[in-house]
Amino acid sequence: MGFLRDYRAARRDEAELGTGVWRRAHDRFRRGLDRFHQILESLPDREVVRAVAPTANALADLLPGVREVCAAAHHRAPSHSQDTPASAGGYLNDVHRELSRAGNAMAQAAEALTMARFVRDDDAHRLDAVARRAEAVRGHVDRARALLAGAGRGVNPTGY
Image (cartoon, rainbow, N blue to C red):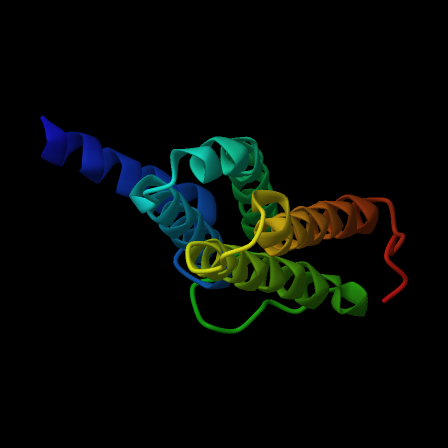
């Protein structure tokens, strides 16, 4: 039963996200999110875990939005290679760049969480970097969404 479910999920992902840049951007974000949660679950300090849980939940709440942006971008400009498809004014390059930055910021948030394990300071101070990185992730996802929405109306909301 698990094999069939995995097969169907893979087929759905391929249909919605393609096999190119949009799929890779989504999968990279998801891997970073999974890594963040793995690190959180492995922390021995339960107080830190409780303090970071809302941030972890907020990051998890971004995944459907990332999928939505990637699926919409794939629908507008299908990608089955490593090249970002051409677009008027290059807005798809900007969308992909923001998705890539979101993935990078997610990896940095996981790294900051790992480092918080070793800092011997008060909880609020050692978790500042995690919160800053999480906010950066949200900002990049929001900009990618705005770029894609603005392109449909013929505007570039970020001014790139």
